[in-house]
Length: 115
Length: 114
Image (tube, rainbow over all chains, first blue to last red; front, side):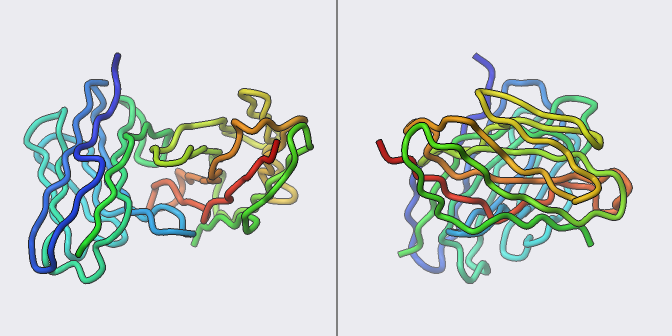
């Protein structure tokens, strides 16, 4: 079955540590996205990538970094510079030819807790 | 700029009740509108969409009509089930917006009691 996988489902980190969240898709989608979700709030865009080796900042990129070395993979690193990293992180992707604002497909999410 | 406003939750209903979740939007161009659903502990799934005025999106008994005159895209279902308990997100995208991306509402939590 095609889809988006995120790992791990739950992640705990100590303050001051960097942590990398995995996102893999086998849908042959070109564009991929990272969102942050906080309780009672909508999704906020962290970074997105429309093509391999290229990515753009979203609305809340500070304290995060990404890479896009392969079409299938778009890992997100939460750095120690992110002041309030505890949240639910969602990865998504678009079909080929779909614009950034078009329909997106989501992974199951990773819940990050900073201890 | 573009924005989406949803009714605050939680919305609590009994099984077989009629559901309406309000969504209104502000857009400078001609947006596409979406409803996504998020079941507990999961990612989001597209529930339905509409790409132009007067279009009706429908799926799994849910419906929403794109009303340009009232800038609304309210989600409705005639008879809800316990399994419909989830968080529902309204979203828009506007191709004429230089910041062309999905704009999200805050989400509305729906609780259905048996």
